[in-house]
Length: 117
Image (tube, rainbow, N blue to C red; front, top):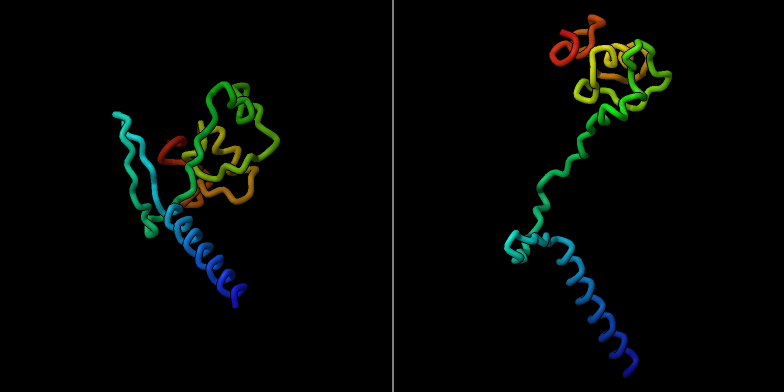
């Protein structure tokens, strides 16, 4: 009987600790500029979106379409117009890379609103 009471007490303590842990996972701690700490509840209904991809800086853009007109021999996963850095690069990706989404009207000219006007 004594062992059963000890077991029930341990299970109860475990449930309380687990409940506190779950509750803390839903809190968001914000450090303000004046050093104050604010604890807010994270909204479970707020959708979480994937981070947006930005093209590399110009110094790193050597892997894309180069100024000499030579093109890259590999596709790096970019599929949309905001990820391109020039019309030439968009044309290369449209012609050589699978799964790109840059030619909405299917006329062979990619990114007409942004790069290839």
